Length: 195
Image (tube, rainbow, N blue to C red; front, side, top):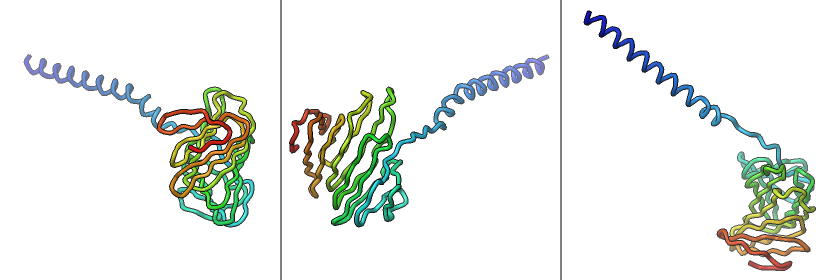
């Protein structure tokens, strides 16, 4: 009789272990499924025009830029040489970004806002860009250009950003609201400012 109870106890322990393993598996399944889902955001900047030596930058390195190249991923970018220019269009047709000579621009983030606005964050470590945008139609839309000395955000305007070799940034705007941030400090800029 004692072997019967030992067998029943082992069977009960096995059933408990199996139930615990099943519960852990079912509990972890949604977590692992959530981790494996990747969302593809169909956003880009497209090369509209080129003049001189312009390079398309991506994770594989750099190559000569061509009209129609798309910047879609984080760190994709363009670099202009001396006496060279390039123009990018934003995927929504909201405007253009002109790169002047000796300029580099990189994608930091392309996404959608909850209200279906478009979020475009770019990084300019050096050079000059001239941005020409129509007014945004969604409150959640953003276009920000980060430089070594801060971030400039805009709500539909024309503005220029110049980044000198030492990282000092100058901003010139026309008739619109430009917001500048450095170390989470926000200030509204007047039409012509130097941070």
